[in-house]
Length: 371
Image 1: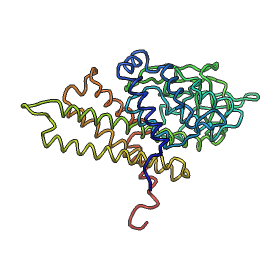
Image 2: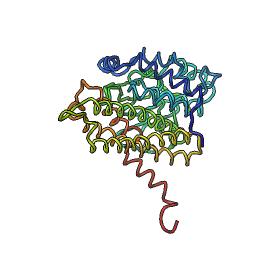
Image 3: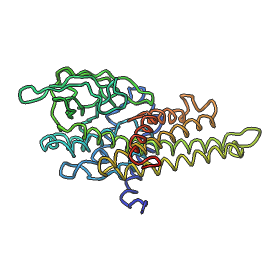
């Protein structure tokens, strides 16, 4: 199998890397964090690069690219710990492009591609943990439309988004709806997250909603799988930068008159971290390549990938802090923010133990002596 990237993909990587290096340095990121964790101007710059239209078809103004291109982009954004939720835009454009009726596509996809609208998935509920079939939000038909009521938690940039994709029970089955943040009955309480970004608790009270698809369970699973693949790619970028910072520190910090990198035990620790780095990268490739596979195969792949990425993120992050010593957890040092980002990503879209359970559950028919 050929794992080389095409010239077009390498050019895309180079363009995003240059933007991160030139326009999204640590000082700017810190400023955005202090201002609330989301910057519409920075999101607009991503749109100018064409990144918000990666998953949008050409007829709707997008670039009509696929999971591998998205992976390339998110690795580079991960290296810069970019706060603006491009992954959510890819989730929204992927779901709307695959499941929404044509009039909804025409209304929203060009705006998503141009960066004029931010649509995020609002699916988590307090009692659900990471189960996608646990949904208490309700939708009822009202005249020629729908009304939706419920509460969703930890919605990325929820008080800044223009609209939400919301799963809700309709006639006893989960359907997927689009609800505008400015609609009557919608309230969003925003707050900063551990990694410096922004999220919100969103409440819907008989809010006007547009039906995206009645088969909400299928669409929701697909949306979450896109989110997992995006998170895996972003995590690889964060791990890469964490490794770079750690190696630079060991090669400059001196103890007993010699650099820390000369100590064999620390070199062995870095070798173990490198192993986890490459395992993470290979499983991120696996997730992206399986994103368009049949649903059962895709779901198994995402659980496997997110489990391995969770193990790698925790191992690399914690060992990086230990190798740095006290400076590794100070707010002034950039490395501590990469550690927090890895910790946050490990919990996103289902933590490591959750996905270990998913992997185990999906092996029941093939595991064991008598399989």
